[in-house]
Amino acid sequence: MARITTLAGMKTYIQSCLGSPVIQVEVADAQYTRIIEDTIQIFQKYHTGEGNFLDCIAFTVTAGVSAYSTSALDLASALDFDLTVGTNGINTVFSSEHQLLYNDWTLQGNYPGGSVDGDAGMRLTGYEIAMQYLNDVRDTFNILYRTQYSDARQQLLIYPTPQTAGTGLLTVYRKETATNLYNDDLVKRLAVAEAKIQWGNNLNKYNMSLPSGGTINGADILSQGKEEKEKVMEDIVGESEPLPFYIQ
Image (tube, rainbow, N blue to C red; front, side, top):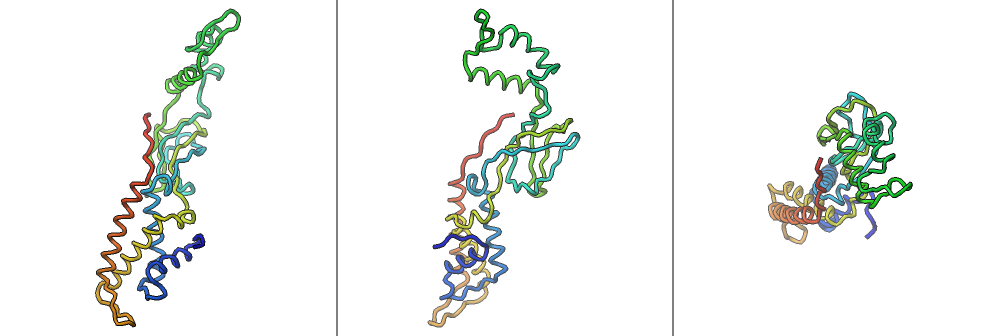
């Protein structure tokens, strides 16, 4: 089957799975649209790795502002914010780190993990040791920011409130676009299950007779849809990647 690239194509796929055009499916076009939109939202929320994915983006903050709109970013969650631009460092002249550490570490060669060897000055004994101490310096002298994201308000809170403007690295989970999810097997299964639930609800008050003399029972379709949805939700959660563990 050709790849599904549009909302209309997704509707056609669901109708085909329900038996159309052999069977008249009692689901309105507007209901198909809502079913597909709800399916995408559920998948984006519960399937980490496919429905949403880990990303790092450059994020600019303004002095004195702690709340930022994220409507253009389509985030699922925000994990960490590392504001580095505009902060002090050992290589920044007259900074506190520079004044405290430059003479001892650079001129005298007493950098942790290094040693003095004649006129050679400081010699690092290991890259990992050097990186660990640089991280320790950052954690000691730089401000560590925390984030709180509200999907309902599409708003990111950064605290403590930045006192200077700057650009930092924001670690987030971003929602995958609907178009890229139409062909996912789990999304298809969930959409069909949701459509059966809607169809069953539409028919629940009466039995629909077929030209062959049989009937379509709304309660049976509703029950089948609920069972299929329960199973596919288990698969969605089960196949989701574990979230990273952050300590700040």
